[in-house]
Length: 145
Ligand SMILES: [Zn+2]
Ligand SMILES: [Zn+2]
Image 1 (cartoon, protein in one colour):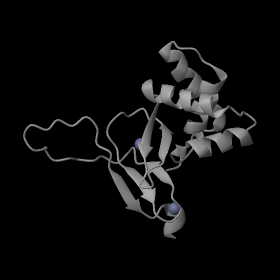
Image 2 (spheres, protein in one colour):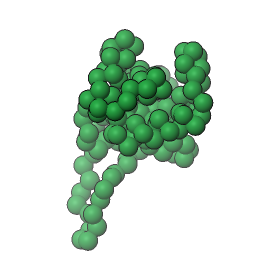
Image 3 (cartoon, rainbow, N blue to C red):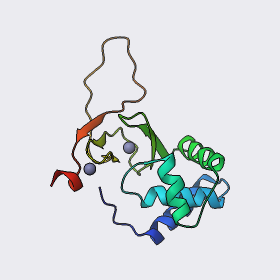
Image 4 (tube, rainbow, N blue to C red):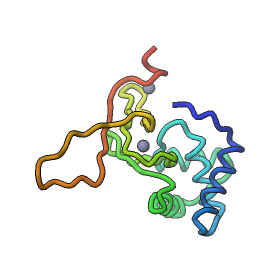
């Protein structure tokens, strides 16, 4: 899913969201949240590490892990496990509803399908759901052609 916002927009959005929390806007928080907003698909720790290095904004792995966990705790990002059991991170969209994820079995990209609604039929009596993580497997637009 392509996002129409530019890198500059995303940086401004990241600042806004951090400001709205009233928490410290550290360089690492700004850089990592902006990167997640820039990305068209969910990113692994490794992806984030390499992309930040390429942008000349390197942070050590401890900082990276800490900031990502913090962003998830603040609900500015969410993390999902792909079929390969690797954690990936995505900036939370404004819509907080449960959405499925798409895992391309050819290139391995995982994307949030934020506009797709999953309708789970009522669970058996006595079960209470907290979170439903649905993953659709298939070919992404880059690979389907
Ligand atoms: Zn693909
Ligand atoms: Zn998602």
